[in-house]
Amino acid sequence: MAPANIDVLVVGAGVTGLTTAVCLAESGRSVLVRTRDRPADTTSFAAGAIWGRVIAAHERAAHWGQQTLSLLKPLARAAGTGVRLVTGLEATRVPCPPHPWLTGIDDFEVCPPAELPAGFVAGWRYTAPVVDMPRYLEYLVNRLGRAGGRIERATVGSLAEVAAEAPVVVNCTGAAARELVPDNEVQPTRGQLVVVDNPGVHWFFAESDTETTELTYFLPHGDHVVLGGTMEVGHSDAAPQAETAAAIVRRCAAVEPALGRARILDHRVGFRPVRPQVRLEQLDLDGGIMIHNYGHGGSGISLSWGCALEVLNMIETRTATPS
Image (cartoon, rainbow, N blue to C red; front, side, top):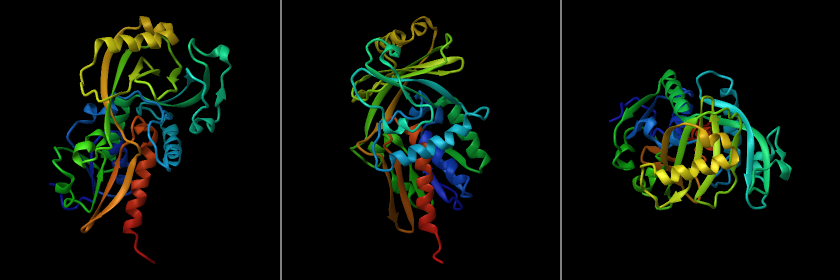
């Protein structure tokens, strides 16, 4: 049971849970994160990840994304965060416009067809935060500790059982919300990645197509590159599949041949919390509130700080004393 002096109990320690906890702890609140899994065992740990690849919907998503971008950029200038600003190419195999989020980036430019990889018909270049998630999650854990927050390993059987432990409970359980809430709109969606030695790749590539189960992207993180990926609804196997990994490498090597010769370091599998719409809402309880913050699909990193600030605003609005 959480200590009586806890202001907020955050359930879940992926990027959404940790970012929310950091935001609340740095606002002066006493925060406890309760999590079944270590941050290193969450889907967030397995992610690529890059700001801007949106696989989530909400009328405030663009606002949350811009808030997150403005807070990730300064982290790229700080040591030990795992965040870097990288220039790269996003392309599509069918004619379509770029995502509106991207066109506002300072160095955004449409590429002429001659500069596109074979098989792609449209594309654009820009610079965005690319995040080495293992390092970034460690950074968030340390930042939470410096702000006075704590992490507790424990299984939460139901949200009802924790509702009485703190005046505010924030549910950041990602794909697990399907069973815990329960919320049948959450569809755990399998993603598999391959991590390779960096053969000298300094740019990112991202296929702009969310309608296929086979995505092509690679994200450089200094000495290694993360290759992706898949978007598999209804596949619950957490073990990496050799055929899937080989296909990922082939697709990435078709864009950047050096990746086909790179030494494989690791395989990662995670389950994105895909939902028709992000769920970020407040529910009143007897003497307290429950805030749901989940369903970000493949956009957890892109929406993380914006959604955390939204949670903070909900709490501050609820607890504000009328003048």
